[in-house]
Image (cartoon, rainbow, N blue to C red):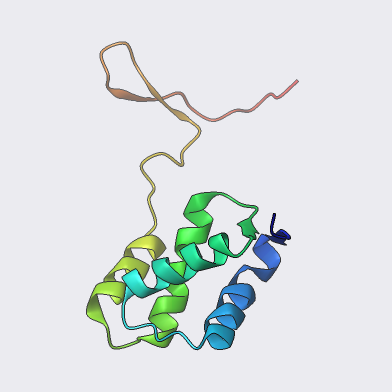
Length: 109
C-alpha cells in the first residue's frame, strides 16, 4: 500500500503546484488540471477538505497558468460572485413559499 500524503487547505495550492512542476505536466485546460489531481490521488495524496474547496483551488490554479483562457476565467468569476439569496438569516419562507422578513433580533436572552 502507498504512503498517504494528507493535504490540508493551508497547503492545497502549493501542493498541487509542486506536483505539476515535479511531474512536468503541461496544463492546457481544466481537464488537464483534473487529470493531474487524479494522478495525485493515485499516488497517495489525500485532500482533507470539502470537494468544493478542492475544485475552487483547481480553477484558481488553472486560471493562474492560463490567464487568457476565457472559459476558465468565467468559471473563476462565477465563483467570486456574491450570492445574497440565502445569506440573510432574518428571511424565512412562509407556508405559501413566499419570503417573509421576520425582523431584527433585539433580545437574545
